[in-house]
Structure formats: structure tokens, C-alpha cells
Length: 244
Image 1 (tube, rainbow, N blue to C red):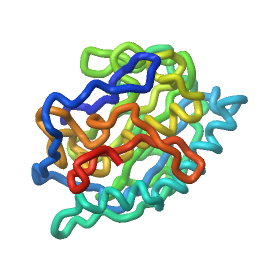
Image 2 (cartoon, one colour; image 1 turned 90 degrees about the horizontal axis):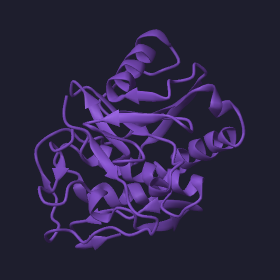
Image 3 (cartoon, rainbow, N blue to C red; image 1 turned 135 degrees about the horizontal axis):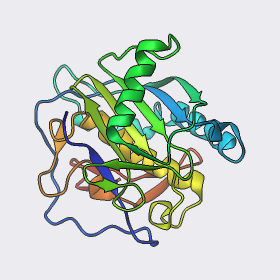
Image 4 (tube, one colour; image 1 turned 90 degrees about the vertical axis):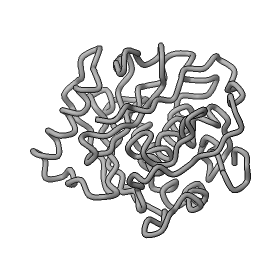
């Protein structure tokens, strides 16, 4: 499995350190998600209760909008021959009512996704542009790569055997991952970060990557804008030479 790519913890102020060198993403020859087909898992019965139940509706609507929005149009510059990046779609979502333990590992996340794919006909089988998002409820910590959510990172994306692409979104119930934003805005901002990175670098480091600065979202971490009534993160544009 490739190393996961996390969005790092930041202080309360929504700022990121200046890139260590002039950013320039280069293509490493790996897969791209040309028409991202997103399926969303909300893990735990807490997502059936308010205020989380309202967030489910908000996040589903966000995916429906953002996958056919100008944010995806920005990514077209990272298409390569035979792999043009275009709009995608949310292909479904499900609330898994079994509550997760208070601490889960990345391996637990992978096993959950694989089990749901194999056992639930409502969960689509992985195709070339499939992307599974897993949202965790409040109070649940995920460990990955020796770090943990709300201590080392606020979300990440990775892959299982170069075949199943996924992103993990811990609940932003800590100051570092709220970034001074309302919960719904923090979630859409970090989700847009991981979405754009998973599309342009689904196997971390094998798609569009910068050895000094990381992925398309890392370069612009915690710089946000409003798009269609949602808070999204700016993403790096090689063409423009800045975060847009």
C-alpha cells in the first residue's frame, strides 16, 4: 500500500507555512481519477442524530455540487494523454449504524471498506475512478502512519493495493482541525482538499506530486474560498503559479 497523504494540523488561524521551494507539481505516471465516482460512508449511528444528521444532508449536497463544479474544472490542467480529468458524481452514500470504537486504525478503515464492498450490494464495486469517503463521528480518533487525527492530521487519502482509492475524514471536534471555521465549513474545506488530491494523485506520490511541497492541496492548505455556498480549499495551479 502506498503511503497515505494527510492534511496537517494547523493553529487556530487559517494559515499555512510558505512552501519550502517554488511549487511545481510533476506527473509521475500513476493513475488519475478522470471522472471521480464518489461513494460516502458515514460510520456510526451518531450520524442519524442531530446535529450530525443535518451534516449528512449538507455533505451529500456538497458532493453533488462540487463534483460538477468549477473546482473540478480547475483540475483539467492536470489531465494527461488518455487521462483527461472531468466532472464526476456522487454515486451513493450510506450510514453504517454500528458504532466505531473510540480509536480506529487505517487498517480498520481499509477492512471496513473491503467488507462493505464485498457484502453490501448497495455499495458499488471499485472501478477505475471510484473513490470511497469515510466520515467518522465525533469523539473517534483515527491512527495512521504513527500519527493520529486531531494531533497530527485532519484527514488523509490513500489506496488499498493500488485498486481501492479512499479518503478518511475524522470529525473536526478539535481546534486544530476546525481551523476557526464552523463544523460544516471545516468539513467541506478538508473534504475538498482530499478530493482534489485523490483525483490528481490517487496513489500518493505516483500521480501529480512535488517532492518539496507535497500534493495539490498541501501547497495551499487552509486557504479557503466560497464556491456555490460552500467553503472549499484553494488548490495549486501549475499553470497560474498560485493557489486558486
